[in-house]
Length: 456
Image (cartoon, one colour):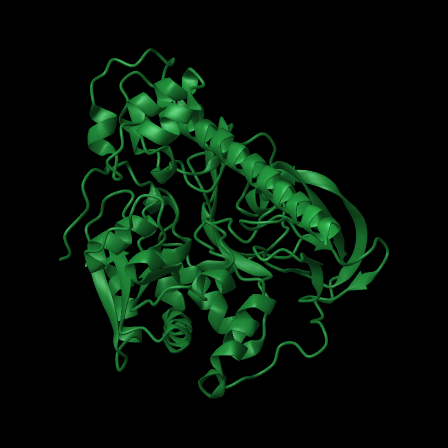
C-alpha cells in the first residue's frame, strides 16, 4: 500500500448507481453541436462553411496557436450552422452544427493500420497531435504539448483513480478495454523513454486493479493500489503518493521528472497511433439520483446532454442541479442543451434532496478547510480576501495559484461557504491581469523594435 497525502476528504461516492453498468454505445442523434473550444488554450477556428458535406474524422476546426487541439467531425453529414451555442465551461462558444446523414462514413483514408513499434517518435507525436487528443479526465490539456516536455522525465503515471464521486467511466474502461490502455501506455513509454511506469487505482476498485494487473502481465508496467481518499486522482497528489516527489508551487510535473495521463486519454492515444482515429467519441457516465437509469455511454462529441439523459430514461424525479462532470469539481449548467465534449467525463443530475445545504454564513475560523486542503493552503483566508477583491494578497501572500480547485474546503465548511468558487473568481481575475500585462509587454517590445529599426 502506498502512503497517502495530507488533507483530503471521504465524500459519499455514489458510484454504485453506475459502476456495474457495462459501456453502451449510444445511438447518434440527428444533430450534433461541436464547440470550437474543447481544450485549454486558444479556441479553434472553423475550417468548414455552412452547407458543405463532411465525413467522420474530417478536420473542422484548428488554430495557429501553439496551445490548441484540432477538432474533427463526429459524424458524416451536412454543416447546417456555425454560430455561438451553449458551452458547459464558457457559457457560450462558437460551434459547428452538423446534421447527421445516418451513413457514418469515415473521412478518406480512415481508419488505417500502423505498427506503432516501427514508428519514429516524431511520427507518434504527430499522430497524437493530428487526432486532437486532450486530457480526458476533465483537464483538457492538449496531449501533444504535455508529451513533449522541455525537461527530462523518468516516470510516467497513469491516472486510474477516478476519485470524483459518481463517475465510473474510467472504471468501466479499465474493466472492459484494459488491453487498449496497456497499448497506449507502451506507446507513451517509447515516446518519453521513461524508466518507470505506474497505473494508480484507488483500492475501492479491486476489480479494476485485477483487470489492469492481468492486462499488464509481461510488461514492465506497475499497477498500484492507492488509498481511497479524495482528491487522490489530482495530478500533484498522484505524483506525491507514487513517486514521493513534490511539485513546487507554480511548477509543473515535468519539474520533478514526471508525466501524468488519464487512462481514457491513453486509450484514445492507442486509437490515434495504431489506427489514425481522431477523437470523435468518448465514454461518459450519465448518473445521479434524478436519472431513471444511470449508464456509462460511448457517446459522440457534440451530443446534447438532453439526448444522453433521454437515452437513460430521462428524469425519474425533478433535477435540482445538472452538472458537467462530478459534484466536487464539475460545473453546474443552466441548460441541458450543452454538448458532450472531449473532457466530458460525466453528466450528473441531482435532486433537491442531494443539493440542499442551507444558507451561506460568515467564516467561523474553525480551520476545517485548512486541515482538508491537500495543497496545504489556507482556503478560509483566500475566500475572505476574494470577497474583499484583494486579489493581490490572495496571489502574493496565500499561494492562490497553487490551488487545484478540488472543493475539499467547500465540502467540510460548517458555514456552508462556497470557498472554492471565491477562489476560482480570484484566479480568474489574476489570470486576466497576467494576460493584460503580457499583452502590454509584448506591445512595448514591438514598439522598441520598431524604434530601433527606424533609427537605423
